[in-house]
Image (cartoon, rainbow, N blue to C red; front, top):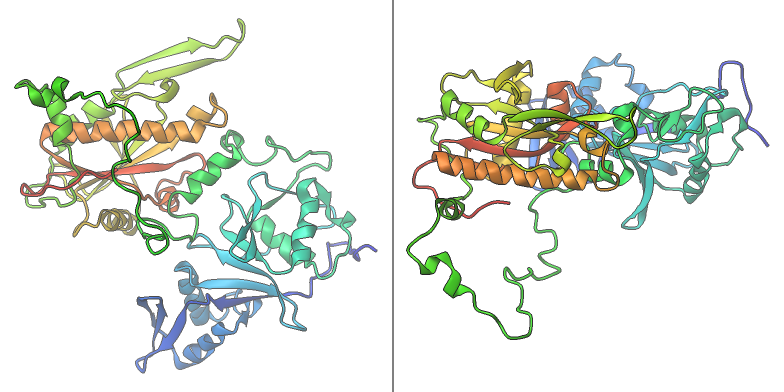
Length: 490
């Protein structure tokens, strides 16, 4: 039995989309009219709202129909929902209006996710993205994608089964009617999140070349997933040094237990046993992470220039013909001071400046070929957020004087390497970080590698999509406080 058809498209689905506060969130109103959210050990103010809005907001614990405020006619309530959503404190439920059963729960993964109504017509052909996947999370089944702004918790197993049909392109008018599958609304939400996508022609097979631009074509599934889930900005999972397993498993020892067998002592050959230690060996041993910087004596533009010249400037350029015959493609190279997989040199440097003598506070790109800085017009609030996140990640009392974001032009590596592209990029980042550390130590500056970087914030500051060019590391540099010493980081 097929679903009814109309000239304009499919009939409206009876399922209702509602918005609720996330289960761990409490919303309270102060006598002054200020609304405050509390979750775990955190709390913050959403601002002052009228008594009417405060009363209506309490209904968010049980849920409000999304269509009742999504239009924005009630501007004050719409503002409140947007603020809650911007902090990841809401979720969206698609369910039956008759029995209140949830079919799907939509959990935002990016701060600006907002469900959009995508028109789905009978003639549309949809297929699952090759980046979409379903997995077990605790006792739940979730559908997600590294491209999606939200994940979908599947509450009814029939829905999970029905979605499998989209492993091949399906025209909407030919879909079987499967109660309780909410075809129209759910398909629209999945298209909005790029978990499903529309094919331009009915005969399209929906394979790699169909989905997205050339840069997306070059991504393997596991690489894009690794990139988005091991950085901040495109998922809502716990992140960083949380010691998540400290109560379950003992810490592995710092030194590996010795292998059995007779040891061959090397100490008699060590440089420590002689009076001669090379300058390079001494530099390696002096290297350490600096998290506190002397803002009374900020780094100078001249020092920053010397640092970049010694670590990242392009030294030479060339072109090589690939071995595919006389008409085969060629590839250009631009070597730099650090090693790079396949000489791809895909890494780019973006400089966030808080304090630097002779250089204005702002956001810059380092042009390695011309040894120059080019300003980027980013919002001051975004610059501040980037610097503050770096300070938090380092556990530092203040923002760094200079924050270098290392971004990768992913296609430079994936155009050549299959299955190992992202792995090679991270190895290149490690080589560059060591180069940063040693150069900073040699110059008498302080530096600190940072393991967390927000790829969504960077995309907003540069206007570059996260899969085209995105951050893979950060490094803080400046004039360290002289008395500081500490263990190396990373």
